[in-house]
Image 1: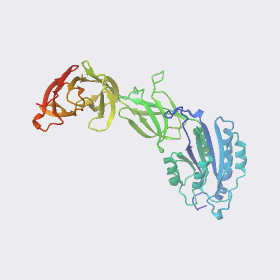
Image 2: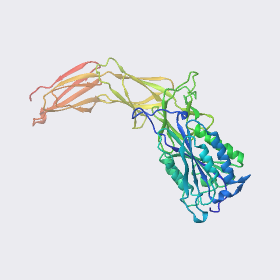
Image 3: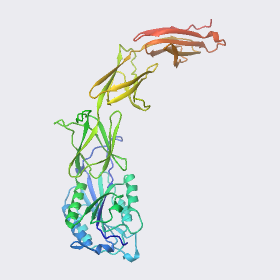
Image 4: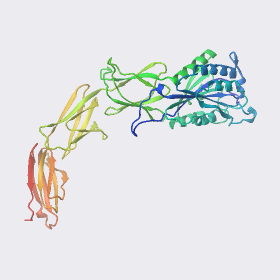
Amino acid sequence: MKSFPKILFIFIVLFSSFVSNAQTRNQRPIIKLENQKTRILFIVDCSYSMYGKWQSDTKIKITQSILSNVIDTLNGKANVELALRAFGHSQSYTLQDCNDTKLEIPFSNNNNDLIKDKLKGLVPKGSSPIANSLKAAKLDFPECKNCRNIVILITDGIDDCGDDPCKISQIMQNHGAIIKPFIIGIGKGNSDYFKCVGNYFEVNNEIEFTKKLNDIVNQAIYGSTCQVDMLDSYKAPSETNIPMIFYESKSKQPKYSFIHTMNSKGLSDTLEIDPLISYDIEIQTLPKLKIQDVNIKAGSHTIIPINVSQGTLVIKYKGKEQNTKPIGVLVKKKGERETLNLQNINSSERYLVGKYDLEVLTQPRLFLENIEIVQSSTTQIEIPATGNVQITKPNDSFSTLFVNEEDNWKFVANLSQKQLETISLLPGKYQIIFRKKNSTLTKDTKVIEFKIESSETTIITFENKNK
């Protein structure tokens, strides 16, 4: 072992093997922790330095004693399986064997005594291939569709084989193989070395060692609770009935999906989720909100406040609409190009407080800007009901429709080659410029101006001959 300070560490890594057992391809069930199997792999450092004196005994003896006591507390625990891996116990440290790591007791039910017996017989001999042990640990977990895979590594130093556990941890976190590790250090020492690997905690005696290990095991077995308070403009948690998706911060994989709910007391309902994960939470408002790196405090109730001030936008026709085909409205944040929502006329939708631009998908397009949404209020927009123009023309022709805007003719659409065509238009002044396809004279162009009124039909006919 290299000449680093001889400090005892407990290194905890959570492997995430949660796989949905959804009934359908696009549905993920919400599974509470008590319904999941928790599998804990203990990895014990048996490098030569574990013979070193610490507190009341050698580090290996203290580790064997405390770990055995913790294993006793898990005996008979429902939905919990244990396994044991050790490293540095097969070859002398003089050989610097960086592959000296072995799964001693695989996962199975009721194997607590087997693990304790094997633990008692471990004799420190060799090196500290920490990174290689972490790599190997991923393969120690048999395939499982609904398991929480946790690794607890006990070591008195750092990797002495030249590998980088920080790099391995980050790669595995980014790919969703593990969650951010927890590290407990006894005494002062390698916090800078391990802070890139995961959450570092320092303890100074055997009592703290025992307490922290028990705390972490309890975190592994039991979930914690939280509530999401959706705040209005007055900072009151009054907003609700909004979908929210919890993602693992590192892997970006979805973990939980909920619709926010108020309980019978009018408070945000309590959620039971895994406390060993940092979350990115997406609130599916319009527009969407996202908060990153949310940590749930284990063993307590966490309140997550989010500003979700909303109002309602109602879009309706002014007058009777004769067109039965739904007409959509593109809703965008003021001054932005990205479409937030396609809202049909004669519907209502809730949006975050602010200003929006609307593009009504009529012919011609209708643009409405600076539409303000106010907290707990309804903003009503009335769109003029359309009218119809029925056009009869020869099959082979060129014909284009224009609308009069501020005494300028603006393009609306090129008409089809159909002999009879009906188009729904906003009220206003229009003209059609027409010429038969086989004509060789520009003067054969015909222009017809007409007016469209809401809920009325205008008939236009082009003669089927040249004059």
